[in-house]
Every structure is written in structure tokens, then in C-alpha cells.
Length: 567
Image 1: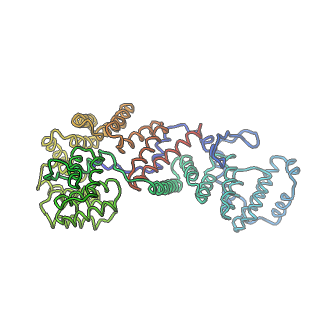
Image 2: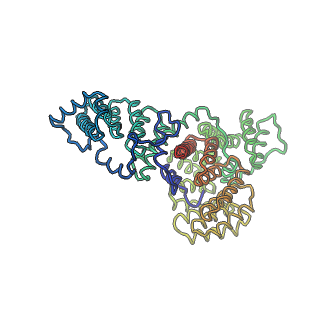
């Protein structure tokens, strides 16, 4: 558990960072997506062939006349205006073509004003007719957008999209047309296109449009949830990275069992002995296979609770929570005094957000054995995750009081002291722990994180370096050092090399994958970043993990699309 929380960054913030300080040409960028099929680049042209007004000037004009409800014309036209509108409606295309530009614009405004009046009165069909007539005189983005508003109220989403496309061809930075098209795409279930349009709105408004940002977040969440649900239907449970698995096993003090000297693989006990030794050797896939065989064949009462506990642990790590709970329940049935099964059952309840049952497991465990230090350590972890830092500190201290040989209790005590603002106590705890466990890479790694938080960059780099020397195959200090080299030292190449080094030792390390993708994305290498984000989807075990990974993939795809459209 890191010394400082790495809060999730919103999609809008990630997008903002990606586009920051880049000279994006908004016209070409957004216009590229105006075709219904979304293919091909659109080059700006003016329908009149004349010189286009500066962007800012056009946007200022639109503020006064964009929406039907905010039109400059009065809500109700006079009889003479009504008669004039009827006269304009009766004109042939040839007669319109013969009019001057000024007369056509005047006629279009008259027809639009009548359309606005009808729109305000919720007479949408008639308003459509008037806006269509206005377009005959002048192809104006606002007229198309107003007609799209009518179609939206009539539930004709295809027409909304078509008119918004026409509006955006005329004015590619017309935010309200983008918003309206985004909503129509969403109602049609074309969520990716909707997400793209909302993202463009965010970019065009400099990420100051709170409504668009919320819509982008909502769409991103929905896209991720839908895709994650589909993947989970066919995804087979698998173990996470060896780093993750090892960290979980090492969070418990070792249980020393009297195992048979030889492994009789015709018996469940023999397979359990093989599984137990494989865990010690950090050969986790082999351990899982042997453990499954042990339970299938059946173990003697001496080992049954331990075998079920081990299989439950592997199922939990795979994200197969129901089978994990079944195994742990059976383990407790086989040996009601085996405290570790209660602790692990607490982890399951925490993952299911069943806090009351999670804490009950610790109460039951303490009733069985109040002197088991693991109970207090893991309850401390639950308190830490829940933000109950004072309670966590007391639990870690109690765990150490019962057994001070467990390095992680020392580390977590220092971490929570730091969280509580007791910086001197935290640093003192870590300095003492460094002396007590001079060969521990974990102490150096977490100590480095505290140093980073205090902006002691040189000392942190040294600490991460020592962690790497002590345990060259542990990917975590490589990742921490990589992010420090990138963010504090500006050495992107070294950061990338360190992340890739971490992946050499643990190809399934999701932290290394995510860190490398983040660096590449911020360097503008979105295509490379996308490959690593796609890998994160493959590595995800649970639906929440999948949703998180997919949200990054979809956000990155949207960024790539924007960049490509920008040309």
C-alpha cells in the first residue's frame, strides 16, 4: 500500500493534459467527424465562396441568435411579417436565386423568426417547415441547428444528426450543434460517437464546460460498463501478476506445517504438499494446479482446512469470489479455529463492500485467538483502506506488540503515521525499520515514496535504487523510480526503460503497464499508449478493474481520433 494515495484522474482532466500546450486547429479537427460515417477529412469551405469571418467574431454573433428561444426576433410576428413570410415561402428557387445576397439574408431571417415563434409554441412540425424555407434562402448553421432542435423534440434522431452534420460543415466549432448531435448519438446507442462529440465540446470550450465534462464522464463510464459486462461473460478467471500474488501471500505470517518428506501424487495430501512448496518457491500457477487436484482428491483432516484455505485464496486472487467464499466456509467447517480463514473471508467481504461482515470476521478471529498478530495487522489494513487511520495505527502497533519480526507491520505503521501528519514519527519508524531489516527491498521502496512526498528527490532516487539492488526482480521500485525520473527529472527515456525493465521481470504487472501507458500518452505517443492500455484490459480480473482499464482505452481512442482528425 503506497504512502500517498494515487487518486483516479477524471477523464476530462486526462484529456486536458493530453491536449495542453498543443496547437490544435479546431476547424479541421471537429469537421472531420461531421460525416455520418465519420470517415475522411473535411476541408473548410465557405458556402458563399467569400472570405470567412474570424472565429471569435462568429461565436459572438451566435450568442445573440443561436437558439429559437433566444432569437433576436420577437416571439410573435406581426401580421405584415407573417404575410411577408408567406410570400417568401411561395417563391420559386429561380426567384430566390435572382435576389441579392442582402435580400436573401433578410428573407431567411424573417422565416427563421416565424420558425422560432412556432418552436416556442411547441409546434415543431410547422417550425421544421419554416426553418427549411429559411435554408432555401440561406444555408446557415443556426438554421440547421434550430431545425435539429425540432427533430430532437419529435424524436427523429437520424434527422437531428443529419442537420447537425450540415451545421458543422458550415461552422465546425458550433458547440451547440456538437452537443445536440452527441445527445442524438447517445439516444441511438452510438455511444462512441456521442463520447467523441462531448469530448470535442470539452476541448473547444477549454474544459470549462461543466455540463459537457459531466456528459463525457457519464458516456465514458457507460461505454466501459457495457464493454466490461460483455467481456466478463466470456472471461476466464486467471491469477494476476506474480508481484500481486506474492504481496498477498507475504501479508500473512508464514504457517509452518509438518509436511510429508515425499509427495505421493496419488493422494490429496501429496498434491497439497506440492502446492505448499510451490507457493514458497513463488511458482503460483503450479501451486494453483496442485491445490485444485488436492481438493479434488480429498485431503486428510490434518491438511484439509489448509488446502481449502489455499484454494480459496487462489480463487479470491483470480476474482472468483463466490468459489473463494465457498472454499473458505468449508475451511472453517473443517477447522473452526483456523484464524487465517476468517481474515481472508474478511477480504472477500470488503471487496463486496460488506463492511459489517468484514469487521465481524475479525471479532470472531479475536474471540478464537486474541494473540494472533495477523488479525490486528489485517484489521489495520481494513481500517486504513476505510480511512480510519487512528484505528489502523492502533492495530499495527498491537500486531507489532505481539510479534515485531513482521516487516510489513512496521512499514504500514510508518505509512499511517505519515497519513496522520506525524511526519517525524513516521520517519523515525522507517529509520528504525531500515536498521532492523537492512536487506528488505520493501522498506527501501516505501521509504522512497515518503521521500518523494517530501520532495526529497535525490534521496528518493537513492532509496529506490537500493530497493532494486536488494531485489532486482521486484518491479515496484523500478516503477516508482521511473515515475520520479519522468515527473521530477524530466528524463522520459530513462522512465520508459525502467518501466520496460519492470515488465521483463513481471509481464503481467498492471502497475508497470499503466505507468508506461501514462508516460507515452503524455509524450503524445497515443498509439503506443493504447497498446499498453489494451494490455491492461487483458490483465484485469474483476469487472471494476475491467471498467477502469476500458475507460482509459476509450479515452485514448477518442484522443487519437481527435489527433487524426486534426491532421
